[in-house]
Image 1 (cartoon, helix red, strand yellow):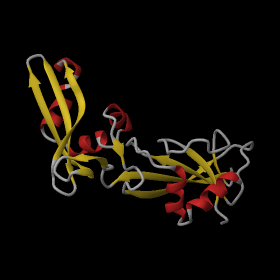
Image 2 (image 1 turned 30 degrees about the vertical axis):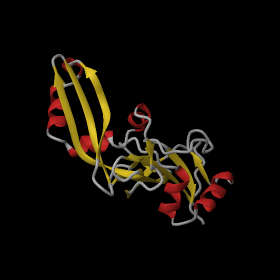
Image 3 (image 1 turned 60 degrees about the vertical axis):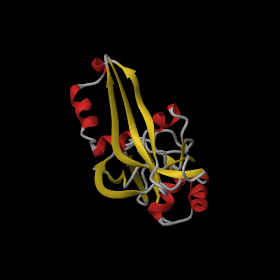
Length: 200
C-alpha cells in the first residue's frame, strides 16, 4: 500500500474582524469591535435583529443589521432564543460573515483579524495513479467560519516565511490546489486542499 501525509489546518478566530466607520463622538473614522451582544426588537408580526459593535476608543455603539422586518416564522425558535441570550458562538459567526458586511456596506479590517491555526497530521492511502512524491504533503483547510483570509497570508504564517516567498512558491507550483492545479483563488475556503512541497 502507498501512503501520503495529510495535514489538516483548522482555523479558529480569536475575535471577529473589526469594522471601520465614522464615530459621532470621536469625530472621524474609528475601529469598532463586535461586542458579542444582539439587539432584538419584536414589533407586532415583525422582528428586527442587530449585532452590536462598539467604538474601540469611546465605546459608542453601532447596530449592524442582521434581519429586518422578518416574520417570526422565518426564525427557528432555538435561533431566536440564542439571539435573546447573546449566544457568543452565534455572534462570532455573524461577526465573521462577509455577506452581512456587504449587506451593511461595512468597511472591514480583514488584514488584522486574529486567529489560531491548529494542526492535525494523518496518513492516508493513495492510488497508484496519484503521483505523490516523498517530500509532498496534502494540506487541507478547515474553517467553519466564513473568514476572508488570504491564502498567501495563511501560508506565510504557518510556514514562517514571507508572503513574497509564498507567492513565489505558488508561481513555481510548489504550492498548488490539489483539484485545480493552481491557486487562482485569493482567499481560503473551508475544505480547500493543496499539494505542498516541503523542501524549502
